[in-house]
Length: 315
Image 1: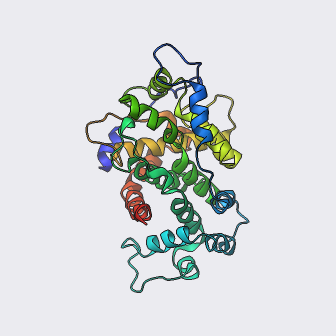
Image 2: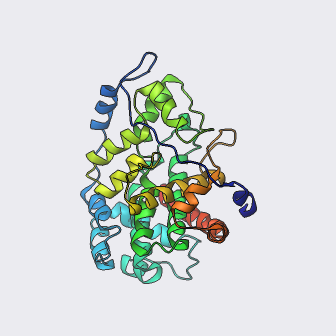
């Protein structure tokens, strides 16, 4: 698999830049106002989840802070313990408390696992219109999150970036949760091959908006951190005036997404996805050819970590 992924590396490809949304056009199955109404009907994130998201990426947040938050939500607690007790960690004795979990997986991993446990049910929606398999968005999102963290590690982006990029990779396609039901009811299927921006154009042709625009509104409703909201809104369209830090994160998320698609995580076999790896993304995250090879070598382990996290979706 690693050799195949490395062959997808293409130097010199220009990142796509596209507009955010358009007014309803002739032939659209739904308009912007209907989309906004659907967003308004989404359930709010629990206060615990929002506070967990606020701590991710904050260097001064501690394991004790997260432990206190997790204990307030028994569902998240159960999912986290189920994950720590999964075969991936190979524990001889089962873990029965959050304190034990922290001692085994460490503070940094705790943040990511708590977040995954918090949003697993939200991201487990069926989105066949996008080419995802059963619970495919959840599977693909957790894989992208783990791969984004590996990009941060290989590129020496720092511990804070590891958590922020994980979060951005996990939440990037949340807008599809709103558009998916409209597409499903219309019988539409979005083929994902070709240019990066093609999926956005196809969405706008059918719904007048795209999942990045919708995701930004969902993030606003859920009071997600501004940096995460920016990443959700722009992960397909890296603005030319973005700061170096923002551009690096957006490129990392897109690179991780391509790797997840290339690994066929959460997608149906016959659905085309844009999975080629272009040189500008690799360069934008600060990797040269050797660095990219090192990243590819770590893909199997990252995928294994993602697969271990899938158990929380069944809790």
